[in-house]
Length: 362
Image (cartoon, rainbow, N blue to C red; front, side):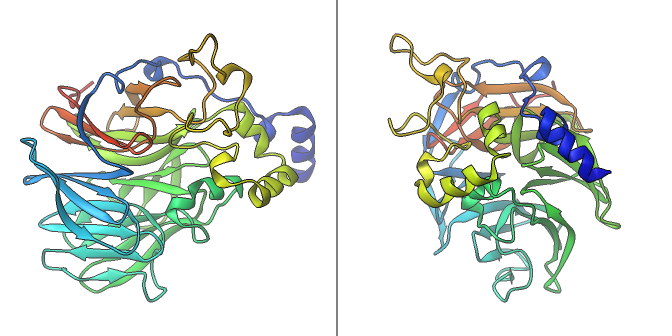
């Protein structure tokens, strides 16, 4: 019966074969708040953010930097041979995820502890969160593709992602959930249930760490969810890689076309979501995305976008911050709070943003 249903869906363009995309409406109604934000510091490939007493910690390629809250220039804390794909700070420790090499702990009582290099544990971490002083949660986007190859994993329709629990004292790595379509974000809730972002299925899951049971809590998102960070009032900030569009949804259902595109077309020119667009005339374009009278319209179809959403303690969207098709703060893959200020990493446009007074209960 399932095969018959899939056959009918493909013929009628419904169910999993539909190419419709939810609209940005309600709490997700577009605005220009990210474009209007204060520039905190330029940082090429700005990625993971962590707030500490001594300053804002951010990653850029294989470097981990610390920016002073008073505007002091960046201080390099560490440099690695692999790209830093995830960060988490807690109790004098800094957990660093290295793309293709696993996780290493810097500072604190577990200084030097590492996971993944011997083939055990997550190899390609995409996000980290401390459950307590001795336990670290890790999402691995894919067992096949590295974190930087997220676009390839989407076009290959990958589903080999996982959630791990690392015991820092014993060095034990336990896989809690597998078979995820790009696990990209995790956040602790103060109980045995945690929030998990599953990008290619456009949803947020509730995961029971004891049993491994999963339950969708936020589905049919109009964008690809990424990392999850704590927000004021026991809520959370949800960042996104980019928004979905119908052409990409259509291409995901055309296996032969995707195989040729991956084999024959350079990656920057794939018809796929990206962290920044409009950098080359050779990029794939659509009619409504073309410049009209020398202007790119804010409502154009776009492959890149800036989107951050504030959610309640139960992951209900409350409000959002946007950088639209014509904006200059795309690929906002990480956020963190300090006091009443919200800090955002725009990886697509290479800068750190500060939104004063935005870290508040919605």
